[in-house]
Length: 354
Image (tube, rainbow, N blue to C red; front, top):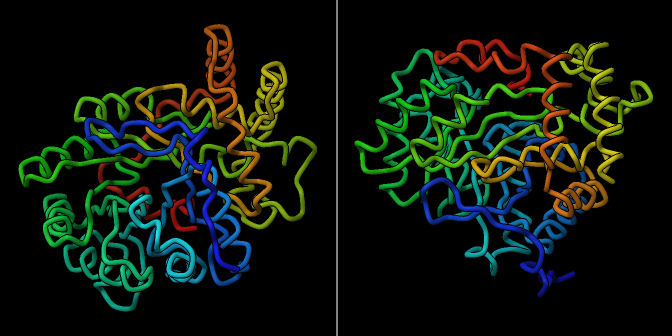
C-alpha cells in the first residue's frame, strides 16, 4: 500500500535547536538500536517509521552494528526508506555511527581508525540506499587510536559530501572538549553528542552538559527509560518476555534499591497525571541543553504512548526537588560515573555491545 504522509505531521511536535547550529531536531527522535533487525517483522518496522513520521518525528538514528545481525537495521531501514520515504528525504535527519566490531580482520574490529570509519560510512550508505547521511558519529572513544585521527576521519566525510554533520557518542567531557577543539581547527564543527541519560543514570550532569553547551554542541540522549526500568513493566515483578529476563547484564542492574526507587518515581508520575515512562521521557527534556531524547519502540502503541510524554513537559520546582532527592538518596553514584576518556571501559561494558 502506497504511503501518504499525514498532512498534520508538523502540528504538534516541538523542535529544538541543536547546539549553536541552525539545525533543529524533534524533541523526541526514534532510535533503531532494537526492533529493526532481521529477527523482527518488516511490516512492524514499516508501521513504526510511518507512525513516527506522521507525528513529526523527523530524526531516525541508526548505527552500522544495529540488528541483529549487525548491519540488518540499516538494510531494513534502507528498504523502507526507498519504498516509503524517498520523496521525503529532505524532511528527514538520518544518522548512523561506527566504531564497534563489524567485519573480520583488524580493520573491522572495535576501532576509531580512519580506515574503519570511512569504510564503515561507505558501507552504511549502500545498506541504507542513501547518497549521504545527515549526521555521522564516532560511536565510541577508541583508546588505541589518537582522537586526532578519529576526528580527522569525521571531517573528511563531511568534506567528501558523505555526511552533512558529525557527532560523537559515549564520550566523556574531557574527550568531548578535545574532539570539539580538533574539529574546529579542521573547519568542521562538532554538531552533537549522544550519551545515555535517564533518571537512573545522570552522569552527564553537570560536566558533559556544560562542556557541550560551552562548545555549541547539541545533546541527544539515549536509553531515557533505562532499558525499560522506567516503565510499568517491572512494577509487579520480572516479566518473562522482558529484556531483563533475557539478558543477564540488564537483570543485574535491577537491584532492590532501584526497584524501590522505581515504585516511588511511579507515585510521583501518578501525581502528575502521567505514566512512569512518560514522566521519565519528559524529565530528560527539562533542560534546554538537551536537544532531543531517543526512544525505541516494539509496537506503534508503544511509540504513541512515548510520544504522549509531549503532552506534559513542564515540571515545577517541588517536583524537580523530589526527583533529585529520591535519585540521590537511592543511587548516590549516578552522578559520578562518566565514561573514561580512554574508552576502555566501554569496550568491557556489555551495555554498549548489545
